[in-house]
Structures are given as C-alpha cells and as structure tokens.
Length: 214
Image (cartoon, rainbow, N blue to C red; front, side, top):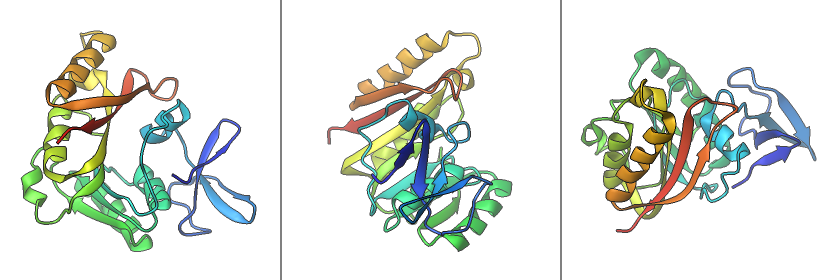
C-alpha cells in the first residue's frame, strides 16, 4: 500500500496532479505530488494514523465502498488503487452528484446510487472484490456489511467496517456496543485481524479489519 507519512500527517500520491478534491493541501516530495489525507474527514485515515497495518490495499485492488458520501475517502483509495476499481455505493442523490463529478475526473471510480442494505439490487453491477469497506452510520451496520461480504468478497479478501456507537444505541456504553458488534462478526465466521479505536479524530468509533474462512 503506497502511503506517505510525514510527521503526524498522512498523504496519498495524487492520481490527478494539481487537482484537489475537497480543499486538501498538496505537497511535493522527491518531485511527486501528494494529497494530505485529513483524518477528521476520513475514518480510514484515522485508522491508519492510529496503527492499522494489516490492510491489503494494493495498486490493482477492487473495492466495494458502502456509504461513499461525497467521495473524500473514495478519492484517496482511488490514489492508492490507481489500477484498480472502487464501486462507490451511496444512497443520497445529493452526495451522488458529487461522486459522479469525481468519477469524471478519476477513471477508477464507479458510483452506484443504491441502498447498501439491499445488495442483491446491484449484484449484476459489481464483481468480486478484494476489500469491502463499510462506513454506514446505522443500527444494522454490521448486518449489511456481512450481507455484502457474503455476496461480493473474494476468498482471500478483507472487510473493514467503521462503527459509530451512537448510531447503534445512544444509551448503551460504547465499549459494550463494540464488544457486541465484535461477537456478531465472529459468530458469522469472521476473524478479527485488527481493531482500532479512532480517537482523537472520531469520538466513540472503532474500526474492525476482518477476514472470513470460506
């Protein structure tokens, strides 16, 4: 995975030199332009800065991204997997407009206006992928994550889910929620490869990197 770390910042090699996606800073190192990856706007950047190191994200990886929003994190995955393809699933038509504009700039993004809770609706649009990434803030997030992995994940693939405790239960303590979600994943045959809390960038969030025995 090609990521540039400098001091306490993280950056990706810009697929489209000179072009920003969300007003991020551009820096140059050894005549290569990088985009600073803001961990307060991307949970994946927060996880990487907090020590996530077993993620297999290569230059030719195929990724199913659930909850793509306007494409901040998608754009950085696009930088890393420059010869791959990101299927960017988003439910909001407003966010989708920005995703479509982004896909016109970047050849490796395929935006899909779909509901991630109904993966069979896009079964004929998405191939098997190396990574399923889920950032959907809702109560049944783990369930939709596993449904998508069951349909689309390659045998040697990985899943990465970022869980917001308050989206599942506003009363229960986050620590209890995280344990319960981890149990769900394990009960369905998934091994937890890494678990990374996202503070100080995101409060009451955790990321689980998982693999499954087929």
